[in-house]
Length: 464
Image (cartoon, rainbow, N blue to C red; front, side, top):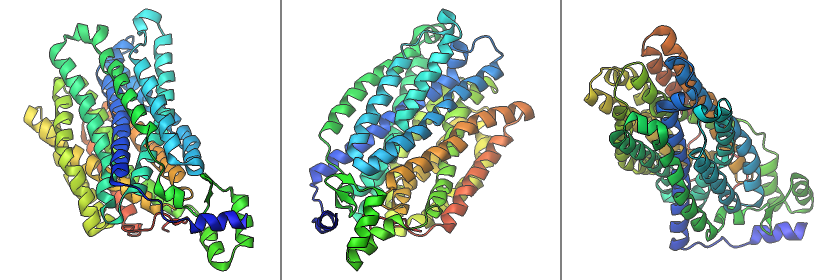
């Protein structure tokens, strides 16, 4: 045991070429783009047509709540996937897990497009929808966490924020593709055509993207940080008992490195990461999901207006995401977090006034601002900061859990809560209030968190 651990610790740094980095970057970007394309396809469908296709026998308001609840159940499966695949990724490597998650996500998303409707098979239709949403969520629960870990562990230290932001750019690309597809469908199809067969097309077309992503990941090399970890021998992480045995038989330096990773009291970094996640996740659920249905159902705004707004916001995001990544590399993660979250809270009510004004330019401007400042900007920072907060031994698992628990508490529950509060109050102000609360939670978390820029990601212990 001692010899194997010593050999692992003396292994020279894993070398990766520029081509390897490029392949990892494209793989991480594409997988995340696919996840968020699936996410946005489903969320837009839930907001626009699923209440009529799968829940037709209830009032419009109840149908919207039911569609949002069906959208939210996937987050339960995401949590299970985060635990299962996260632990697998920390033990046998990031690459193998990312190959499995892309298959699960792609297959389930494609099958949603082939589902029979309520009119065809009755109550079994929404049941099957929930089942596929659960399978989709199980795979997605570790996809973005794995891509985040992989890119952060591949990136040069001085450009870690910029390169890691490609994961966020993947979310933007997926949102853009899904919103673009829905915008086209809403523009060229009648409501009858959309409900009859048009809604299926985006889900079925995602199959081609899945095939390309699978092919790309087959040739991907393992994370260099995983290979350099002192607790990894022969491509597999040692168990806790094996590491404890190695600590006893190792010299002071070797034993200290291993002990730092498994004897550190866990928890603080996790809760800080959870708080950092809250603002982005909650704001995303409100801006990208709930407002689309709310504007169409409650304010009688044309359904193409909010989807077009998300489309334009995603285009602007291609500049927002890398700029925020660069700012994080230049000034540190904490200060940029504090500025963005404070700004989001400050503009929440003005943005909602614009969105609910009934003016198409107002809706467009409000949603573009909300999406870029309160969602995409925070996501760009989140991609690198959460990876740096955690030690290498449990980075994948802790990061995945922080993302998914934050998703359940904010993104999944948020739209349902917003639908309920706006129905009860008859007003939009609860949406703005929720944006403020979500953003302030992340502001406080950033205030309490350490600066992680430049941290050595091979270290086994958390940053706090």
